[in-house]
Image (cartoon, rainbow, N blue to C red):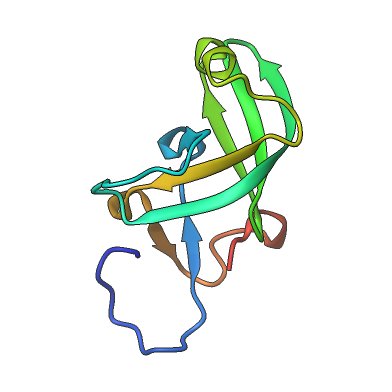
Length: 106
């Protein structure tokens, strides 16, 4: 789900989510207020300064920013099955030309 917008069913849209607004779970989340839960697999992990950057494939690839401590406690590793949790109001509809194609999620 995304925040309300004036769109028609079937319209193509671009949705942006800040990497730091995505939560990761290593078990299927239940009874959440967040409306968007996507199952995927970790495809890469790297540390950039004080941020752990996880790339997760779940039909499209998402970049998720976590603390190194969170990565440790979740025992993240390449191939690990995870669930992305994204609140509706963390999703932002973008104009068609607002994002480069390499960073677009449809």
